[in-house]
Image 1 (cartoon, helix red, strand yellow):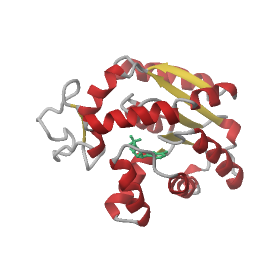
Image 2 (cartoon, protein in one colour):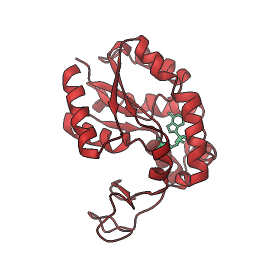
Image 3 (cartoon, protein in one colour):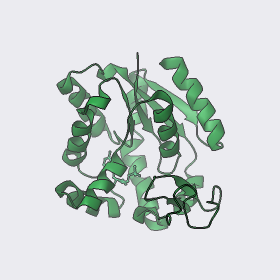
Length: 222
Ligand code: AMP
């Protein structure tokens, strides 16, 4: 039974929100490399120090760094029966690395079990989405100051903590992240299509509709 998912889609396509919901629904760990790297930066670890320069420039962090982060996380007990990977793999090199990690771990989840879900959305709508994105530093809830604003401007509805904007969500860095996505991540669609493991969701819809489509797709494969 497939219980390991990876999510593909351009920055701001909504996969963060949907994968969190799905992780809760399926009771699987949600593993988000961007958040893991930002956590390392906050804690001032060696990994964080290396990652920061790349993240601030909108570039991919080197393979050995993300690979270490992912492998360590997948070795934790809660990942034995499945997980949701969000933001990894992000290049062909990383997809091959993920296969290698799964071979090495030799656990219940095999590389053939990985199901890729692609969030299809035109990139034009995304730059605006990114620059309007804010999040709660405490609970991680994501807001859009134009389309899903908090009740009290600038503060989390649940925690009443001041919302923050990610440093790489500025217009200039967002554009660089799109370029990186097109060049590095987009080719993965072909990689997983060839394996027969790719599902596509129309992500240019409301959060509720994307969620309904996602659940339908996932129910048909697990
Ligand atoms: P995200 O939160 O997924 O948008 O990721 C933010 C930034 O973290 C990216 O722009 C990259 O610099 C870095 N990052 C996250 N995941 C990866 C990955 N799988 N490989 C390399 N860099 C990554």
